Image (cartoon, rainbow, N blue to C red; front, side, top):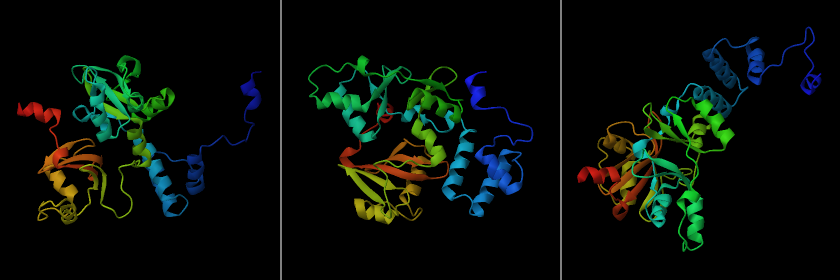
Length: 300
């Protein structure tokens, strides 16, 4: 007899089988197990209405079930909005990119975004700079392997792979092998627990927070007149009440995280958004507004 059979003897006749916590809740509420995903969700919502389950727990359960139905393509950062560094560039030129994006991991490319040779961790570059940066930065030694996944991969499967491999970023490829975008473990977790706040998020009733020269984080719900007062701007509020509405009109579509647009002397970058509205924007004003690579190429 092996160890497993010794520690878990077979159930005797009449003994109830082991039930998951969801099944236990179901039996307590309805004297039976849910027969479908929709019935399970309704069961959980009814439990919340009856005070047996708090709102945060319900939202997380809904997120877990939603993740099982979603694919990487639903949440990935598109190729055009990926923040990358070029292998042959001066490593010191990467520092402004790292600071402005506030990311911790960066795909390293050769001549195009289809040629990703690895992932650079910001901490590795910062450690080299902290030591003076006198010796040549060995990019090959600093690179971490890039993980490539298909657009069709389910998010629940990807999350398991992230946990098993301890990777936090994956490069998404299309059916032809070209780079379609990237996805991080944070992107997946936010589908379950909601938005994960970082140093650029704003607390309380504050609408605008400065975090660098000419750089601010702005809630999309900031009234246009308050934005104008703060930045000495002159955006019209005849059509929209909030800066988020104005920016969305400028895009002409529902933007995804990472998309950018220039309106007047301001560059707006979407930091947080869902499929219904923008939540948080990065705003760069005046001298900090520079052409993005795709804009520069279009103007040549």
